Amino acid sequence: MTRPVLKRPKLTRRRPDTLAEVVESLSRIHEIERRFPPDFECVSSKSTTSFQIALGQCQAKDGGMASETKVRLLTSATPLDSPEGFKAMLTGVTLADLIQMKCMSGASECLRISSSGKVGVLQFSEGQLTHAATNDLLGESAVLELLNWKTGDCEPFAMALPQSSVIRRAWQSLLLASAQATDERIHSLEIARPSPEWATVEPGGEGTGTVRSRAVSVRLSSDGQVLTSVGAAEDLAAAAAYALHMANQIGEYLGLDLFKGCELRGGDLRTLVVMEENGDAFALQSDTETDVVDVRTRVGI
Amino acid sequence: MDNGLLETLRTLRDIKGVQGSFVVRANDGHLLGRDLPAVIDDAVLARVGPRVDRLLNIVDSETPTETIAMRFGDHRLDIKRMQAAHLCVLTEFTVSAPALRMAVKLVSRKLDNYNWASPPPNTAPEAKEPAAPGKAVQFRGGRMTL
Image (cartoon, rainbow over all chains, first blue to last red; front, side, top):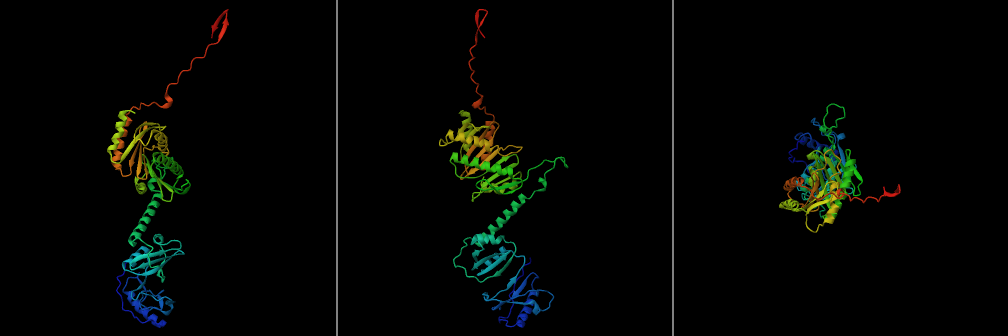
C-alpha cells in the first residue's frame, strides 16, 4: 500500500454545530482527499471535539460533494485529546505497523482492537508501549497475542490504565518476537505440508522411484499421551516415548542434569526429541536436514 | 582392561570438554572398556550399557541408527554404533561438535579393528557331566555292565 505523505491542511478550529457545517467541513476534507492516494481516507478533522464524523460512503473520488445521506454523526462523550492531526481509516495495515507508527511518533494514547469477537487494548505512553490486555491476558503476552490477530478494527479508546508499565520489553523486541513466532509457525506448517518430491510411489505405479519417508512430528504430554501429531506419527510417538524413558534413566544413573533432548541419526533419517518447558515432549522425524535445524538448535546439540 | 583399548579411549580427551568415554558390546550392552572418572563405577555402566543398546534400536528403519547425541543440562552424551560395540563419549555441553565428531570417527575406526578379548558370557564351553554308571546284569553266569 502506498503511504501518503501527510501535510497538515488548515482546517477550521470552530466546532461544526450543524449538519450543514459538517458537510461543509467534509467538502473541505474531500478536497484534501483528492490530493492523497485513494487508499487514504480522511474521516475527521482536528476541530472535532464534541462528536466524531464518520465519512461513510463519501470517499468517492468523483469530485462531488458528500451528501447528507452519506454522513453519519456519532456522538461521543469523550473529547478527542489530540489537538492536531488526522484521524485516518487505513486498510491493509497490520497491528505491528500501527504499534511502530504510534511508538515512533511518541504517542500517548490507548487503542482498542477488535477481531472476530475478541477485544484487546494497547496503551502507549510517550512513544512506549506500556500496557496491553486481552480478555484473558495482560502485558507482554497480551501484546504477542494481539499481534497474532490478522484482521480486525482499531480505534482510539479513552481508558485510564495504571501509570506504571506492565510491559518491560521494548516495543521493537516484542515485534521481533512476534515475527519470529510467526516464522516458526509458517516453517512448521511447511514441514507438515507434504512435499511433491516426497510423494509416495505406489507399488506398480509409474516409475520405480524410491519411496521416501515424510516428515512427521508428534507432541507428547509428560505422561506419554499424544497431544498433536502431523503425518503418520504412531511409530514416532512410541519411539519418542521410549527414548524419553531410556534417556532419563541413563541421565539418572550417570548423575547428569535433566534430559533436554536428543538426535538419532541413521543414514539420512534424523529423529529428534526435545523436552519443552511445560514438560511436553516434541519429536520430529525427517530425512531432510533443513526440517530439523530449528529443533536441533533448541536442543542445543 | 587392555592398555591398548584404554589408550585409544584416552585420545578422545585431547578434545577440550571430553570428560570420558566407555565402550559397550552390541546386542547386550555389556561393558567392554572405560575411561571415565572413578565416581562413575562399573555397576552404573552395567545399567547404562543395555539402555544405550536399546536406544540405538528404537527407530525402525532400513538404515539402523548410527549415532545418537543426547543433551543433559550442561552435558552431552554421544553414542556411535560400531561393528561389534558401541562407543559412548561423555562431554561438556560446550565441546566443539565438529572436533568431537572427527575424534569419535577416528577412535571408532580403531576400535572396529580391535579384538574384543572378553568372551560373551553364554559362549563358555559347558562342563561335561560325568557319564551315568552302567547297569549291572547277569549274563551266562557272569556279571556284566551294560
